[in-house]
Image 1 (cartoon, rainbow, N blue to C red):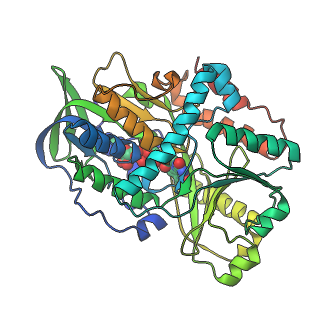
Image 2: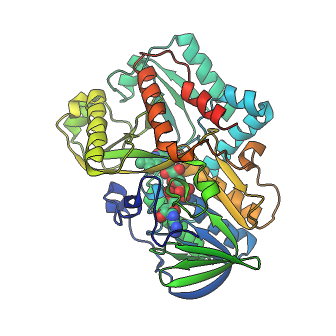
Image 3: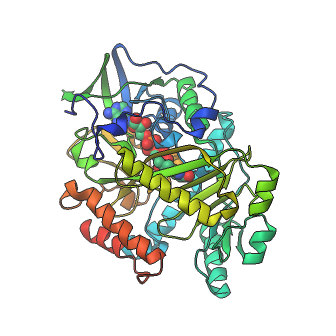
Length: 467
Ligand SMILES: Cc1cc2nc3c(=O)[nH]c(=O)nc-3n(C[C@H](O)[C@H](O)[C@H](O)COP(=O)(O)OP(=O)(O)OC[C@H]3O[C@@H](n4cnc5c(N)ncnc54)[C@H](O)[C@@H]3O)c2cc1C
């Protein structure tokens, strides 16, 4: 039974921020359909907790493709969580295990299956935008990794060729001069690898469009409806919200980094929530863009472990994101936004005087075995989960929601590698999860600065804890 009020590993303040002050929220049109809070008693085949990409994609596919009656509930408005706050990189990703480690741990076939899943995820998001006429796409295909350390040209070529083979797309190696010529000049970039897969979108437009599509397919979506109580009675699930009750045959838990304490402790303690922060400038002038030498709208990130992600938006604003801190209290928030700002100015000194008009943060979710999971607890029938996308869930959560819908409907192979179907590991002493994260940040920060060798100790430790 969850508590009467939503609480979280980072405290109840996580759910206190009702209106997120993001650029996306300032620039997204409202939903076409209403998502009013639930009032009264309702019955359905499947209740979905969480109206982000995971829950909304599950609802769309369950209603449209499998004919189920579905009710989606969110504590905030649809897209209130990470889905409406992210960088809008609809890209390959979802795991923090590098390909060699994934093949060594789970086998080469499973690693290849995961590569295919990442491609399917991007293609599925693109298809939904197209088929459901959601006006959220913002860039052409492609994403670029800027190298924060120099790399031998042969090694760069080998990496680009490996990516081309894995993802079946064009890749390109760019030297420092190429970057300047392409309008991708950032301080400290030694070159880059371009992969022509993935695209940029407006995440809240996508989330709201997905909610509208799910409603059009027959699902019911209720915003401002936190699930505060949950009990089981003769194989049915009875959910309590402030002004209503739902009687459902199955539950999809789609809360990712926003898993409240007590909702489902087995699943919650497997999640390591981590904050990511974003700043968005005012629209840059032509002169400012020319002074910095960054004029491409290509999605970009750097090669650090604690990476930065950035992109020029269609109206000339610049979005810059990176890791947040370990606390939401005011002083800590100011501290991690100061660090974000310092990193932004170091990479783009020409914009040192250009303020951020908007800055906000949100939770991503990490797993102790470093891979996403779509699963059911054998001891808890009728309850399904999809989560743990490691800060790369725009595409992967969409695909995981589709897989969940197939699983809940018993509609055949969801096309996932076996390791994703297993319950995610719970670390020893889960109450210390924020401490584990703090240690990982210290280690990664030091390796990024070249103070420590490039051994991925936190990843090795996480895998050890996950045994
Ligand atoms: C700042 C930031 C930048 C990011 N950038 C990118 C990016 O560029 N590209 C990328 O691929 N990924 C990015 N991510 C990650 C991506 O946004 C997430 O992986 C993805 O949105 C997860 O979707 P979700 O539906 O699983 O969870 P969320 O969108 O987080 O939704 C979970 C929902 O559950 C609801 N909830 C929780 N408890 C309850 C309850 N008891 N009752 C009702 N509702 C409840 C919450 O209100 C919330 O809306 C970023 C994340 C952040 C925070």
